[in-house]
View 1 (tube, helix red, strand yellow):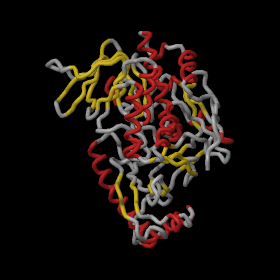
View 2 (cartoon, one colour; view 1 turned 180 degrees about the horizontal axis):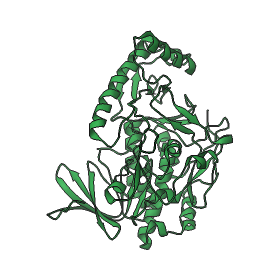
View 3 (tube, helix red, strand yellow; view 1 turned 180 degrees about the vertical axis):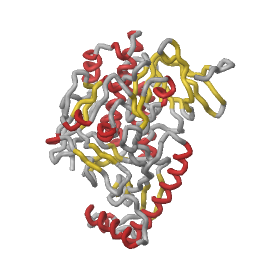
View 4 (cartoon, one colour; view 1 turned 45 degrees about the vertical axis):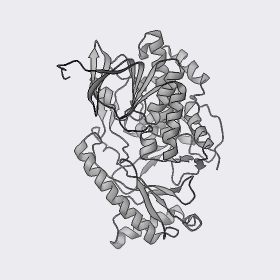
Length: 442
């Protein structure tokens, strides 16, 4: 750890500091503030939402993917959906492939919704601030060293939530983690999403998914197109003539390496233009369509995964395992975006769900740190299921609540009585151990 030769200016101080404002981090900040802690949410971009506003326009994981889909995520995450409904900027639709019932929204509106919800809960927001290091003392993080246009600064806190997606605080604090791709299974590929306007939905909806896939295969065989992924999806949005895509595929990239990410960003946009050309030239309804925008950055599925007090694994997912320290649940399939031209799917049997244990959010060796979101403790296959944004939000609610309870009682997160945490989560609408609240709309 570097030794700072001059005293860093104190930018902010809070009982609970959440790093990263994606679906997990923003939800964590809301939960922490509602539980009574002075809470600060730190974000490197100029808006909240992370992948939910930069890359995607759909929450998956709220519902099981079975024919009789049921909602398995509630509480604060569903409040965000309700806020989007208030703006008439969300629809629920059947997924175009096997991820299950989808909640599709307008990302621009969601940026404001996240801000409104975080501020209404009483948390503070600090944007344009990037964490570059941590200060440690006796196995605890005492502060974040952050960088901005003004230079380096210090943010102090009692309890920290790492919702960076890449386990940045775990990495900086020396807590053990596993880098994706080092376990014998390549890290999942990256995707640049894009949106298209001017689509004739009446014509476009006549093309079934298998026809779209066969069209991609034929386009590649013709030699006139280069489409690395032959089963990508395109779906309707809350805006009448606008569709969103999940099509491109950039493989074998370390999402924490800026050199590799630079190449991936350029390649992703190159592919997006090629898929746009394919849709306009080959698919009915897209003849007069146009490219609206690329994702703000390329979508990253998998980088660092922490070694926690428990490691969620493939068998836990496929056996629909329940845990005594459950804090959320998931029914999403294993969805492995490997380097090939398709995606590997494996489903939880009988439309069931498995629990996410609290211990998977507790890094080893650091006493006052929790994680939330895709950097939780899980193996490659379990991670390919549990990383859905619905589950990231549910983990965020659990981590934020636990952080606030730990700060209030002057204890470490791993020392909390799990029954007290579960009681508070249930009171705030969270679901786990098989609980459901609704049948999915179609």
